[in-house]
Image 1 (tube, helix red, strand yellow):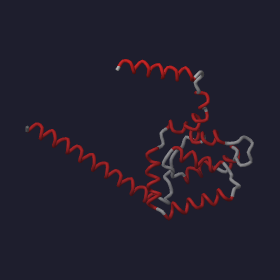
Image 2 (cartoon, rainbow, N blue to C red):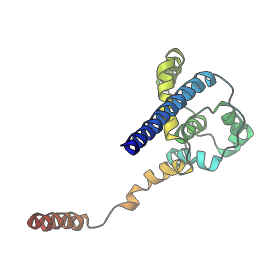
Image 3 (tube, helix red, strand yellow):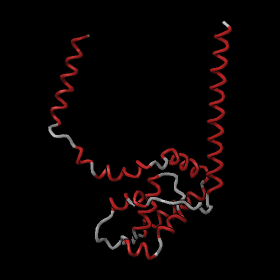
Length: 179
């Protein structure tokens, strides 16, 4: 009986420690996001080969709205990207990069962007909740390659898909009589 009480107490202590640690981490993240909003990001080195994948996969060749590499480098846009990048996820970085490389002449898009910026400034709790969700996505190296994978989905199509459907039906028919 004493062993059971001891084991139960240890399990409860571990669970309580885990719950406290989880709450403490969430609280730290919340405070960090509130503090960092509007601050200049710390200098960091970026792998632009990975960050520019989304832009490369979605741009239209010869489009007047794309900023070419020569102009991009002449304007030191990699440094500007690094100066304004406060993204919490890899796709956020890629989207920011694509936005900087693509000139939009659409007034409706610019007004929509302005509304989103005002919303983020005025609705702190919603902004922080969104940032927390984006933090969960994170900046894993593999995540930068998702646009390339999605653009190549047709390469993964199965030939003669009917064979796989037939095999599923046969498997089901083989399982049913065994019961």
